[in-house]
Length: 221
Length: 221
DNA sequence: TAAAATTAGAGACTAAAGTTCCTTAAAAAT
DNA sequence: ATTTTTAAGGAACTTTAGTCTCTAATTTTA
Image (tube, rainbow over all chains, first blue to last red; front, top):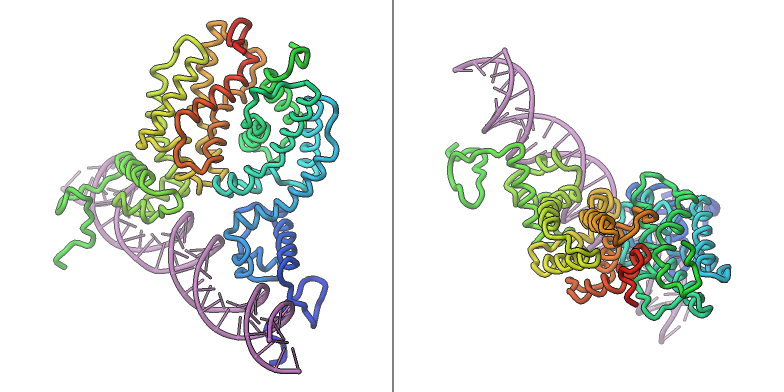
């Protein structure tokens, strides 16, 4: 009995005094570790044992916190999404609805090419195609920061008198997210490039929102 | 050895001469049987062995024809969808775009309440929530009869001079399907009622299509 | 009508999600 | 400081999608 039952260690702290992580600390570590895995491989290729091992912990620990593989992966992604939402909500208010949307789409383009943020809707097909429709809608789409942002833009535009929201249905805030999702799944491309994003904004979304622009705005036909 | 190795039989033909089904006949039987299962239970609760047993055949037979559980279930649903598309394409051309769409939505409402056609987008959450995003988009959404139908309506409307399709992007034909999908997943309701459908058409889709109506049409504000 | 080629049927096998139970470390309570 | 409670670690176990191989029925070809 020379070696202790489990010489658990990570990459740095090699030998003794291995500080068993608990609670929030462990949880944060696991999510960070999982995110790291998702960035390397696609959803189906990741196993729960891999997640556990990669985080230097055990499967039981995972299931004690999350209900399923989809759960933990989406939770990991959400840690990113949250920071991203903060980053997004910094810059807007360009002075016009179209400007705000264009800025948002530009930002999305940057994120998608930066490859480090290959999530949210980006590379969804590649990375998250294996996730179930129910999980996606329950735990991801419904807490969509994109729609949230769009709503804000419209509210600003409304204050400026640029749009009339009296007959504007709530569901219309979700259109950008829906159309993007559709676009991501429609192509076999791994990435979606800027011109594609531009096309979606200019030829699909802006025309669709035109009826709600007040006279004098955007009637450039 | 009194009894033969496998006295395979269904419900009716009890004893001998059990006609081993092959090819198209078997395939059709399996799909019908699978459809029957889906109508009873939700996707996750169905196992491949259940599908095989219910169709009085074997799992190998299933995997010889379809690549996955999602595949066979979606294939089974598509047998319905096909008939449904035929049924749908009979009646339209009410003389106006809005009329055509209203008629279509009315039909969808009927199908959804008839409960026998509890598929396509209806009861999707209940029945198909377990299916993966990739499978859904690859094998279902992309061959969407709804979008096909919408396109036809627009083409008719264009011929009548009711709409101007010069700047009408292809993606706009998919909006009804997308918005409906979103609606189905957004609620916890099992069914979606007529008033809900009516709301989606009147307050989300029609306003969105308004910019493409030619002057004099639909400018009822 | 016999031989050859297909394809169905049966069942064992693998991999991975999710469960369960037990041991052990660490924190909280006494 | 010792006991009690909580949570992590480890590992066996269950279930089900998907694979593989062999046998037997049915059709095709000669």
